[in-house]
Image 1 (tube, rainbow, N blue to C red):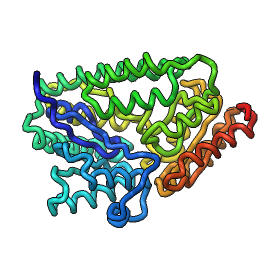
Image 2: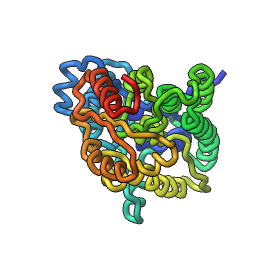
Image 3: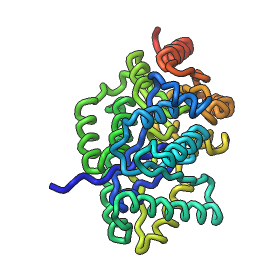
Length: 354
C-alpha cells in the first residue's frame, strides 16, 4: 500500500488542480463555514472582512490544517488576499508549520494577461514540487489529466442529474466539496455514494438558480429545500463554477502552463473579479441551461462584488419574465435568518405556498 500523497491546501478557487496533482500533491480546498465563532486573534489580524474568510483563517491558526505540506492562497477576492498577507507574516515567524504561496491569476484573457498567468502557474508548479519532492513533467501532467478527467466526468453527471430533478442542490454541493478535498479516485467514489443516497423526487421542488456569495457548506441549500425550493444550479465557485475536472494535454510543462492560462480565461465570470455585464450574460445562459423558474441570491456582508451585480441581473431577468429574490449584507452567523427571509420573499411572490 502506497503512502497517501502530501496534501496542499488551497484558499480560493483559482488553482489548476492538474498542476498540483502532477507535482505529487492532493489539492485540498479550505472552505470555512456559514456560521461559527471567530477567535479574537483571527478577527484582529484580518480586520473587517468576509466572515467566511475569517473562519478559514481561524481554522489555520487553530492548527486544524497542520497536516498540510503547503498552502496556496488565491488572489480571487479582497478577503483572501488579506488572509495571504496575514499567513505570510505568520509563516515567516514560524507560527505556520508549512510554506505559503500566493497565486495571482487575473481574469480577462488576452496575450499579456495569459503570459502573466502562465508564469504564475510555473511558480505554482515549483512551489508544489518543493512541498512534495516530486518534479512535474510531461508524464506526471498526463497522469494527472487522466485522474482529473474522471472526476470531471463524475461532476458532469451530477450537473445532469440535478437539472433532471433527480439530485438535490445540497447533495450536489456535497459532491463538489468531496471533489475539492479528496484524491480524485476517492472523490469519485464519494460522489457515487452521494448520488445513491441523496436522490430527490423529480418535480417536487420549485426549481431556482443560486447567485450571490459562494456557499462554503449546505446550510442555506438545506433550509430552502425544506421549504420546497430546490437549487438546480449556481454561479459561485463552491458549485458549478468550481474549477474542477478541466485539464489540458501538452508535451512540455511550459505548453501546459500556457494552455491552462487560456482555459482560465474562459472560466465563468466570478462575482469579485468580473464585470456585472459578464455576470449577467452568464446568469441568463445558466437559466436557459437549467430551466430554472427564478433566481435566489444571498450576499454576505463585506463579500466584495456580488451585491453590485443584483440590480443589473434583476432588470435583465425581468425582461425575460424571470424573477429574482435576494437578501444582501448577511451578517456573520446570519445564514439561518437570511434563508428564512429569502423563503418568505419567494412565498410572497406566489411561487410556493406558505
